[in-house]
Amino acid sequence: MPHTPPRHPDAPQHAGTDATPPTPGPAVSWPDVLDALRCAGARAGATAADWWAQDTVGGRTSGDTAATARLILAGIDDGDPLILDALPGLEVCGRDADAPTEAEVYTQAAPHGAPDWDSLDEPARAEAIDAFGDGHQRGVEARVVEHCRTALPDPSGTDRIDGHRPAA
Image 1 (cartoon, rainbow, N blue to C red):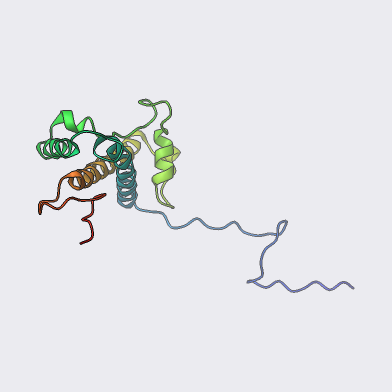
Image 2: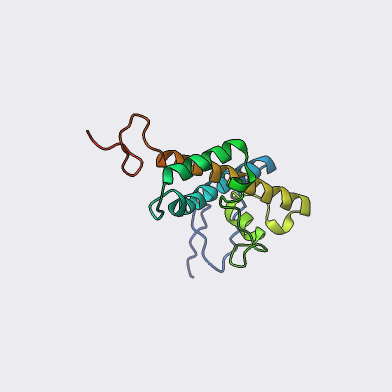
């Protein structure tokens, strides 16, 4: 008579057995989803600003970068649309053919346990993309300000090298 080993509750389940599928993680509240989207947007905005700065006040530019930095900082402080419109914007499909779709942006940025894009109604989708876009704009502006301040001469009169004071 063949011997069948007893089943233990902690024993690993193998394919072909009556294993139960894993239960999904806890659902995330909608305000937490929106906060996560804003944070992801801010990170993406900071990255976009890093690329933008290289050609504006960074290493790949020529001319008076300090004057450019002052102009940009003043425009951001004043809310000048000419300056703000020149900063990197959120790229989503429809504006740029190579950009991700809104669904891809949401899926990549939403936390684990967030509702699927397909389950969101149109107002929730708009709110989600607006949250990501708001974070993106704040991330861009904050990082552009950092880059512009780095491009300014040191007020003490000591020149900076790559945004840092040279060793004494």
